[in-house]
Amino acid sequence: MKKKYENNLDMETCSNGMLEVKNLTKRFGTNVVLDNISLTIEKGKTTVVIGPSGCGKTVLIKHLIALLRPNSGEVYFKNRRIDNLNENELNRIRTHYGFLFQGGALFDSLNVTENIIFPIRQHCKITNWREVEELVKAKLAMVGLDGFQQFYPANLSGGQRKRVALARAIALNPEIILYDEPTTGLDPIRADVINELILKLQKELGVTTVVVTHDMTSAYKIADRIIMLHNGKIIASGDADHIRNHPHPVVQQFIKGQVSEDDLAVLRMSGTISQAQFLPRDFE
Ligand SMILES: Nc1ncnc2c1ncn2[C@@H]1O[C@H](COP(=O)(O)OP(=O)(O)O)[C@@H](O)[C@H]1O
Ligand SMILES: [Mg+2]
Image 1 (cartoon, rainbow, N blue to C red):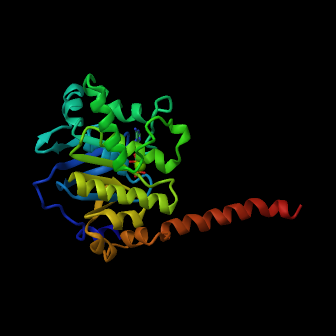
Image 2 (spheres, rainbow, N blue to C red):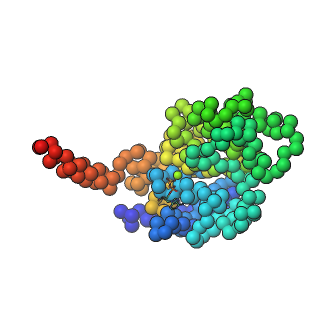
């Protein structure tokens, strides 16, 4: 089946992106997670990376900000190679990024204001506190949480915590925002608030956006372009309609939330095993 669809892999052609990944391979031991991937993230657009759990979405997005280094291949930010920079150089580059990682952890011991200014403090010494207060107010207003400055994370809902993490991600006016599973763990309404915020930030700030998700409702709503990862490769890349109508059966199974034949075989087998285990006891 793999062979048959090999020719249908959507190839990358654009070369003028905000971020570029060239022939990236990442292995952990013998586990090849990303297998010679090339990808361009276009400026000002929202790119959504989809794929089942464990397919390498987080590993890919971490390479975009050089939190992981490839075994081979290169990563470029605005035509500057970043995968081989040292941590000092990277810290400067990372001020152009905002990121909201899986779990989106806020610091529990810091209030909302202190959480939001954390990245600012890492990069400069704050002298004008009035200005900082205004900045925090503006960032919180963008996520609909002005007035929550003194709250601690424990007193916020899950959705509010994500929004504070978002306010923190935009504290340094980033050009790129990376989101890893921003709607996971939220009910559909709160998830949609996050989708709307992602759209709003992209429109109002003109930021380049990369979102990793397995939530297709979210992907269709926010994406200019969707990329699907499977077995270390990009097997599909295009707008929502292109993905909806994609001929690859793995893409169709994923977007429709269907169980694959392989998974079914495992389930049937485990059914037989548990029956075999329980049968003798049933007859005791
Ligand atoms: N630091 C690590 N060390 C070893 N294996 C890792 C590490 N990070 C990720 N992996 C492996 O890489 C694969 C992809 O993981 P990940 O990118 O987290 O998947 P997901 O698509 O769910 O985000 C998994 O098999 C995972 O076990
Ligand atoms: Mg992940």
